[in-house]
Image (tube, rainbow over the protein chains, first blue to last red):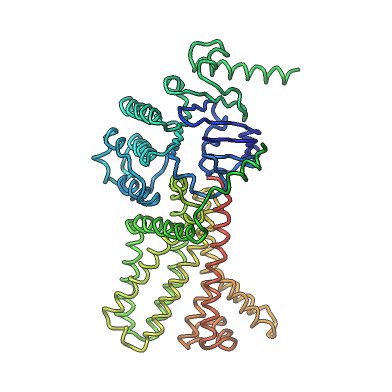
Length: 244
Length: 288
C-alpha cells in the first residue's frame, strides 16, 4: 500500500528522518511507534503530501506522492488535534468533504451515530469540547470508506466508551480489508490492534515486523515494555559510543 | 529497482485528459470558495463592515448632498478603510485557516485549487460588504440617476480593486510569517506605510528633487503604491486634481483622460497578480 524509499527530512537543523526505507502492506493494521519526535507524524504527513521529503520517494497505492491529489481519494486521515473553522458545524464539514470528493462516493455515517454526534451536528464547532471535536475528526476520517486510513493518536482525548467504539470500528473495517497506519503512545491499545509494528528511532527504522517478534527480540512480555527496552538500550548505546 | 524508476513506472497511471482535470479542479475550487464565503459571511466583523459603510455613506449624503464634496469624503474613507480592514481581516483569517487547510489538503484537492478557492472565498464577502454598504444608501437617496453616476461607478470599481490588492498582500504576509501577532504587526505596518506615510515620502521627494526629474519620480512613487494609484484614478475622474496635491497634478498632465484611468486600473491589476503569484508559489512549496 505504501512504499517509501530513501526518505530524509530536516526541519531547519533538526533532522527528523534519515534515509528511511519502509513498506506498509495492504490490509491489516500497521502501528508506527517510537519516542516523541521520532518522525512518526512527519512520516504520516508525507504520505498525505502535507510535508515534502528532502530526498526520496513515497508511493501510495503505486502512485508517487508528487503534488497530484487524486490518490487521496483512497485515504482517510485523522490528525492530532485538528482545528475546524469556528463558524461551521459538523454537518457543514461532512457535507463539504462529501462535496469535494464528488457525488459518486458512498457515505459511511456509522461512526456519526455510534459516537453520539447526532445532537451536536448543527452546533458551531467552536463551542464543542476537545473530545467532541476528536469524535468529529474520527467520523470524518471514516466517512468515505477509504482503502487506507492513517490515524494519528486516534484515541487521545476520547472517553473510554468512545475509544472502544472507535476501536471496534477499526476492527470491523480491518476485517473488510481496509489498511490502517496508526501511531499512538498508548501501546497497550496498539498491542490488541496491530498486525505489524514499525519502530522508529532516531530518524530511522529500528524494527519492522510482527508485535510478537518485537517482544521476542526485546525479551519483554508486552509491547510497551519491549518498546521501552529498545529505547533505553538505544540511549545507552549512543552514550557508550559517545564515550569511546 | 531504484526509487526514481519506481516513481516513473507509476506516474503514467492517469487516464483523464489535462482539460478534463483542470475543469474538475476549477469546480472543486468553486466548492471550497462557497464554503469559505459561508464561513466568512457568518463573521460579525464583515457584517459590521458593511453596516459601517452604509451608515457612513448615508451620513455623507445627508450632510454633504450628492455633489463632489460628499464624494471626495467618501473616497477618502474608502482609501483609508478598505486597505486597513482588508489587510487585517484577511491576514487573521488566513492564519486561522491554517489548521483547517491541513484537513482540506487530505481530501483529493490540489494546493493550487485550495489556494484559489480560499482567496476568492475570503475576498468576495469583503467586496460584497463594500459594494452593498455603499450602494444601498446611494440607491435609497436616488443618487444613481444623477450625473455623479459615472464617478460613483468608478468608486465602486476602485474599492473592489483595492480589496483585491490588500487581500493579495495579506495572503502573502500570512503565508510568510508563521507567528500570528507578527503577521498582524507586519500587515498594519504595510497599511501604515501605503495609506498614511506615503504622502510624507511624496512630499519630501517633491521638495528635494530638482524640478526636471520630480515629475517622473512622483509618477514612479505613485505606481509603487496601490492606494495612491486608486486615489489618482479617482482624481483624474473628478477633475479636481488641484485639490488632491502633487500626485494628481503630475498625473493629469502626464496621463490625463481615459488613458490614465485604464493605465491606473491595469497597474492595480498587476498589484493583485504579483503578490498572489508569490503567495501561491510559497503555498505550493511549504510543509503543512
